Amino acid sequence: MQVWRVNTRQKNDTIEACPQSWERLGGRGLVARILLDEVKPDCDALGKYNKLILAPGLLVGHKLSSCDRISFGGKSPLTGGVKEANAGGITALNLVSLGIKALILEDLPEDDKWFILHISKSGVRFESADDLIGLGVYQSTEILLNRYGKHVSLALIGPCGERQYLAAGIMNLDKDQNPSRIAARGGLGALMGSKKIKAMVIDAQQGEKPPILDAERYKQAQKTFTQALKDHPQTKIYHDYGTNAMPGMSDGFGGMPTRNFSAGHFEGLEKIRGETMREMLIERDGEGKPSHACMPGCIIQCSNVYADENGKTIVSPLEYETVGLLGANLGIDDLDTIARLNWECNDLGLDTIDTGAALGVAAEAGLLKFGDGKRALELIHEIRQNTILGRVLGNGAAIAGKVLGVTHVPVVKGQAMSAYEPRAIKGTGVTYATSPQGADHTAGLTIRAKVNHLDPSIQANISRNAQINMAGYDSLGACIFAGNGFASAPQTIKELITARYGWEVSDNFLEVLGKETIRLEKEFNRRAGFTSAHDRIPEWMTREPLPPNQSVFDVPERDLDNIFEDLIQKDE
Ligand code: SF4
Image 1 (cartoon, helix red, strand yellow):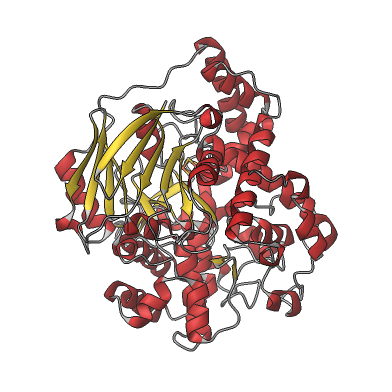
Image 2: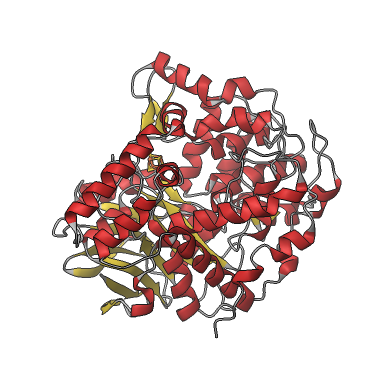
């Protein structure tokens, strides 16, 4: 496997052997290692010294169920710290088929010309993107697929990435050429926009599957893992209801962010929960599908195709975080409206979490009445039109709060919280506070732990374990739900890695990977100027009780400060 570097100023590329110290890392862990080795932590995130890194996970390449994810990374334009955001779809599979361990976009162009990067066995080609500038993600995708063929994969930005909005993400094709798999968090779309790359087109037609050293051993491990995943009760739940299985659980714990995180129970819950959505999609028939795989080989199929009452697709997929932030958080209880808001965000190339949180802040400022879906769509239209208000909202909740004079802003390290209230699901609050990534449920979700989520004394440990596991899975390229299979058959991780690469790894390889990843990330943030003062939930959430539990975030600060104390080892 090789490291491909693209210089966006000189418009050339080089292909190098992978350094030994990077070999046993992949995905999120590799992003952290490259950032620490090559990017000045105090650099301007949108300047010439930052790099945009694409790193497939270690298990990517063989369509192992739900294990072909791509990590994007760089210094975050949103948080100012380390950033990795991963996505499903087919980008990782194609990169690995070309033998690419990491693709690194460097430097900055000296002019305003935009390019498409065409990546294939023949190398990297810069082609003009003039005809795509200003176009939405869906139209750009249609043009690119007509030009390059339906066999390619794409990673592209929308108008918000072009304008370097801090809530912009990078969109990726799913297996059905739908550009909706977003590496959403941390403003990496803005980083790609700073390099004037509108799209990466990855043509793996001449590529090949990566080698497996011991095919029989791999096959056995794959069989065991797949069976364990099939047998896990959560697999059926996510298959049937997708991530939108979560509203009932979240709301049941009093943790459904409602009306800009002012309550934990949403009266409109029944209308937006996954069970309702599934029934509605089945009844509406047509193009809608309650279950859908984002990548080949996924047996969980947690995605969906959301169709309107005429059976015409509005958006695919509609996920819990979007339902939470653009729904309950705005007091909107109509799934069709939420789906339309989702489509707009996708087309603009925007993170629905930070955008939903920014709209919640706008509502608090009086620019939107909670529950008014039409006005929410108008505000998204302001973003599309690039008005001053649109720019404020497109830069995410933290900026919106500052400009609009709102103090109740649900962010950590400048990044919006996901759809789990930290005052009710306190372990996830610990994750928001202490993850080097900023507030992000995927860094360590604790809601499924069978504990009292309101007891502050036990949360740090639960969050720590979840964070280490997730950092491990993100480095393997495994979807969060593939983790259920690995949790039931943990030995298969070692078996798959040893069979594929011939490495002798320990039984606790997942933990080793996870700890190393977090250690590297913490070190990058330390050098970027982060201290324990940044590992805090907003102060108002420690004072203002959240109905219905009337709970505050009261996990002791010393627990937050000590959570990764044993991992801290300076890496000069
Ligand atoms: S479980 Fe969902 S997100 Fe994960 S790989 Fe399958 S379809 Fe994609």
